[in-house]
Image (tube, rainbow, N blue to C red; front, side, top):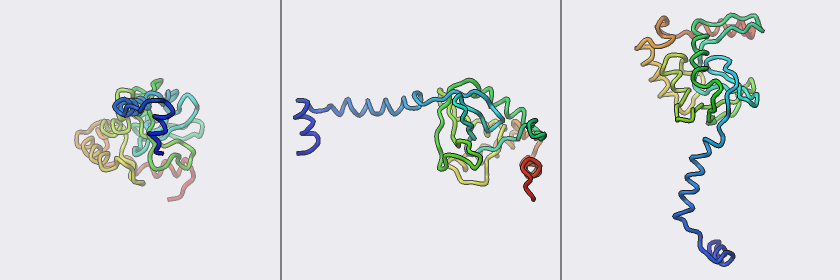
Length: 184
């Protein structure tokens, strides 16, 4: 006896696949809404905290760092502007998080692609508008697209590229050295 004949025998009817498949599809689409999480605080241009106190690091982007008074560290040029742009995108809003290959980074932050309810892909927009550059160290799903968007942002002198013709991340090594005591 197959499963369908057992279902028919138990219920007296056959399931209508014309009804079941659209229902499954509808539930799948709504899962983004059902699993939306509210942002409570934006730390900088690529990191934020959810209402459940989980820290989230956005996959594929690297924004200039902001000052860390707690650690006595200075921020990088354009760090405050990048944080403000991310705040305008997501602060106090519901976001949908899509996982990448790795779920957490070495600091315990959740790694995610971030979407607004209207479908806006926030990681992409931060690069496109020049508030972050493409994270080059690791492979990720949208890397080639982000590199192209970054190139276009540089060419258009958008965001941080108004004053920086190539990359601000050369100074990032010095910043990490000061922040974490890494040696060059």
